[in-house]
Length: 157
Picture: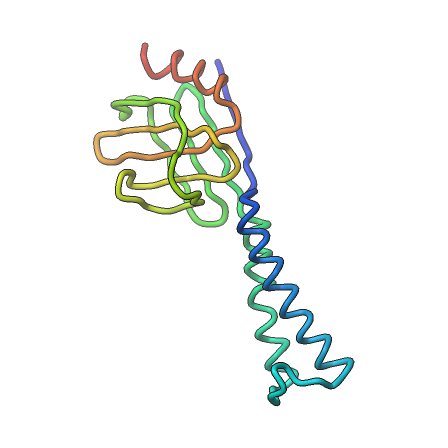
């Protein structure tokens, strides 16, 4: 029995740059107001309110840090878990078409698009395009050779 497991983290650098910049700016504003007594934008804002507002980008940063894509390919099919939200199993019997390729468009994590009903993307640049009777799904992978062997073994027997 062949089993391929993957765990992918969110590694899109542009997302991390934006999030870190937001957290840095909010932290700078809090430090300025707490230590120097200078109000943000020279306007009075409650320190508690400023700290609470600064917590929002920090929570988003933690969310992206914890965001993981787990995939498992075995004789039963493809199991997808996008922590903390979605979980899906696709049996090989439901697969009409499957191929490895590249996702050409703007990087997304978990979303819907015009072409695909669901896109599960984390750190892999190579994707597995799966077409079932009811939907088209894209799953990113960092192990394309192993996935191709799995597809050849179980999907087209």
